[in-house]
Length: 104
Image 1 (tube, rainbow, N blue to C red):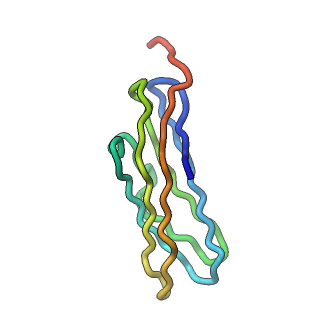
Image 2 (tube, one colour):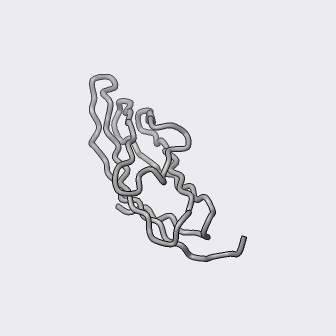
């Protein structure tokens, strides 16, 4: 799945990734940003998320649009064992696009 960060040049866009836990055990994930422009993206509320049983958790990804060219990276979520249970590894493509340019 692809998460698109679109907005005005020089603005910061925050996207919230919602993770559902359908199991009866807690899940925990460590998040990593990799790829060509990974340094331009950040995990504003930390790189770990714990999801209680049968609930959902959220991970915020932040991007400041600094250039006209599209930025690309990959968000990888790797499960930590909680209660002896491993979740699936998840990957999301991150892309940016400039929708508007306003003079400074």
